[in-house]
Image 1 (cartoon, rainbow, N blue to C red):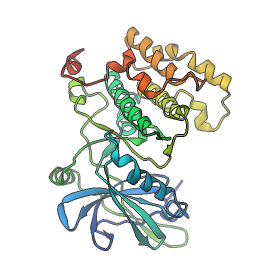
Image 2 (cartoon, rainbow, N blue to C red):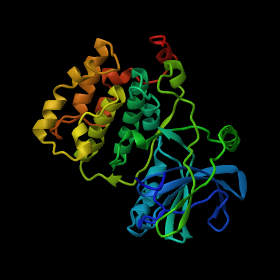
Image 3 (cartoon, rainbow, N blue to C red):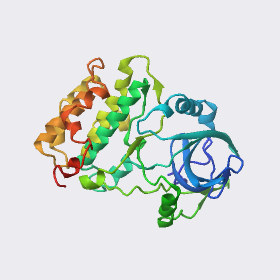
Image 4 (cartoon, rainbow, N blue to C red):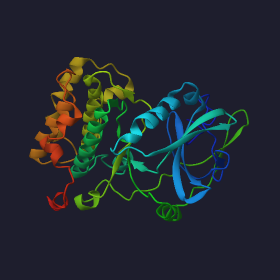
Amino acid sequence: MSLFPEEHLDSPLGYFPGQLHQTLQNGRWRIIRKLGWGPRSSTWLAIDTQDADKIEAIKIFTVSATEDKSAEKERNLFQQILNGIRASIPQFEGSFEEESTKGKHMCLVFENLSPSVEALRLGNRSSRYLLLHIVKKIVADLLEILCELSDFWIVHGALIADNVLFLSASNADDIRDRIKDSPPAAVENVTTANGTVHPIVRSQPLNHGFKWNDTRSDFAFSSIYLCNFGHAYKATKSSDFKQDVWALGLMTYELITGTRLFPTLEKGAPSTVCDKFTTISKIEELLSASKNKLPEKDILQAASLISSCLTLDINKRPQACDLIGHEWVKGGMVCSCGWCLEDGI
């Protein structure tokens, strides 16, 4: 079992050893909270020392991701293309490099976002699924984002619930209020076998206030953002976009049922095209057997959408823009208060 409750600060990848109140970019930013971490970076909330009303999220890449140019690739994508898109993706505010004892780190500055759809799903501790009207809205919102990305020939390449975040506190006063309600946790020290002491800062993303079992009217006010464009690339042919559609189908199934459609893949077991076809052909049956008790109409419509996303023949698989008009997806589109009142939940 790892000594580290968060990112491995002794890893050869070279994670940034950030600390609360530490300054970045020659004193321009001061860290006030840790928001999270992943396989190539950690993200920190920081206040602009030149403008107290500006509090942003700073994604600090590992030394490895900085050296292999993957961090630079993500920065360039935002600078050259993504910042001109109206879709719900993080607002890019700039970049800089920071030196640590590990080496050089590329840092990207974004608006602050809140915990992911995956965290929302895991909030249902017993069954791990989301209520159906919540899934519908998430899927409808994502299809609109993917559709606009395709207009700019961008494939996200890593569409999973962990990479779909909520908009939460956006101005400095709101952020300060959230921090007062949930102050930063105490730093923990981890001592490795060679005697090195690593101060560990716990991740504490700012709560967005939504729950897995929210009513339609409460969840109608949610805004989701597609994040983490480290695997994104410029499409060269229209079929490239269908990678994201496949991923959306898998994610939709998991959000509805609380289980993965192809669980054997988690263990590294082989999965042939034949195995996948057999599983996909049983989606309606699998949805019916889910702990998330669904109305018959929704079972049929959800199975239709998921099966379309998971069409094995990529030439026959629809694109995101084609699926926006799907009957099941329409139920998640918030265009008036009628959405909130449709079933009175």
